[in-house]
Amino acid sequence: MNNNYFPHYSLRRRLITWISLPILGATLFALLMGYIFARHEVEEVYDAQLVQSAKVLLQLTQHEIMQDDDFNLGIENPNLQHKYERKLGFRVWVNNELITHSASTEAFGGFEAPPGFSDQNVEDYEWRFFVFIDAANKIKIEVSERYDIRYELIIQLMLALILPALIFIPFIFLIVWVGVRKVLKPVVEISADMDQRNSNDLSPIEKETIPQEIAPLVQALNALFLRIEESFDRERQFTDNAAHELRTPLAAMKTQAQVLLKKAADMPDCKDGLDNLLAAINRASHMVDQLLSFTRLQADQIDFEAVDLSGLTEEILKDISPLAVTKKIELEASVPSNIKVKGNRDALGIMLRNLLDNAIKFTPAKGEINAVVFTEGNKAVVQVSDTGPGISDAEKDKVFERFYRAQKNKQGSGLGLSMAKWVCDVHGADIILSDNTLGGLSVTVTMEAS
Image 1 (tube, rainbow, N blue to C red):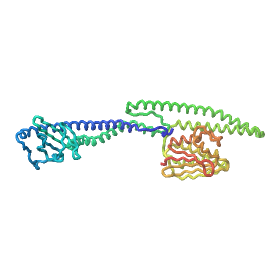
Image 2: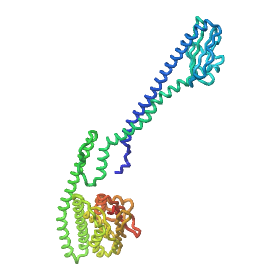
Image 3: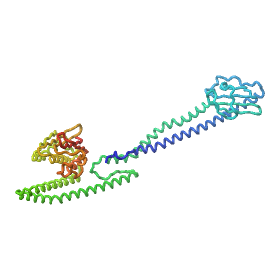
Image 4: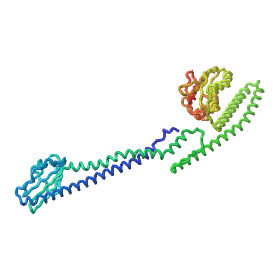
């Protein structure tokens, strides 16, 4: 059955996905929580600093303000400026009159923040304000800070988390990928072993170590192989016994029919019936012989070796050519020398003999058969064409089934092409049936050349 009928999915991809996605999700969640906690702590720390700055400023200026009505902190020293200084500010009011302020608050103008903490937008910048009021002395202290300072610190903290994550997450994914491949290696090895097996190799899967999770699958496959092998053995044994049992009565029937045919030489009506009976016995005998050959071929161990395909084809053509001469069929052959393949000589011989025998059997008298052997790239090709009745397109696949006979070819046993197809499958060869340009059938077998 074609594997394309089954939906495929990758265990490796699913394992990597199920392992990697939680890792990635956990990392993103950790970064999100880190951002939330970092922002909260930064807000707490900087708000505490604003409160501390306001208290220190009040303690440093309260006495002077009360003693000097014209209090002023003086001009700021430009040599002591810091890059963040323009993002910090303060203002001091006494009796609702602004008496001093930092240079960074010039842009505030008449704006006054409410008491306590507040967020305000001044000159397109977000500011955090803290206003402390000393009601007893009618002093109001305002300290302010641009949110840029806080954002920069949060960004720096997050980069300290994100950059290591960006470096280590690919390594984690690589480790997961390598680990999953290593874990699934036994499954891949068993799949490769199954794919490389010969079609008649039903030996159990033997591995030194098998993962516990796939051990039941391996045991089930081994049990299946054992049942299939036992079934094949029973089938071959039955076929072999049945063929042997049939050969003796068929031989006796043939002898009796031949004797009766001689005695009925002067009786045309009887002679026609006996001719039909003898032909039927011959067909049955041929089918029994093919069954025996097929059974023995399947039962034997198929050993591969270098086979001279050219010499094997010429040998079979020489053996089978008298049948073509008897039937007045023109048999043409083109077989270049030294074309070799890797295979089993006996099995390939049975395949070639069946193809040529079928061509002679179904080609009418004075017909033509053309047998050619050639190479095409790294392939060896055998092609047998005849001018017989051919096979319809609807039956071209069915004729490879055992005992199936095409509608136009009722005289065969239905085993020849089945045997040829089995041999081709064992050798990894392709067999294709097509229409001959001169009418009839063309059988093409393609296999690896050596």
